[in-house]
Length: 126
Image (cartoon, rainbow, N blue to C red):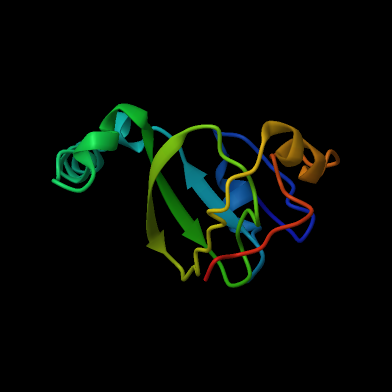
């Protein structure tokens, strides 16, 4: 994901894409990291068998890795699954909105010009 417009490119990425990244405004996300990295699988297993997470383990979809430059990120968005996200490099301030909304309210807030399910309105709890 790159640029303020949140352009997306899907893997596999060739080396020229990676070497042409600017100093800011990009994020690389790796889905299903547990398939490729045994360490990610082990960590994910430990998290989802912990006392506080075990009741929700059935909701888990995958383990995702994130690497980001300054000002990089997806922005406010809606996920349709539960992901264990590991910030590998870069700094990120994660915010959530926990107020329940209906599917109709959610749909009304989606930015239809984006490939991702980005929100036009977002009220962070923290």
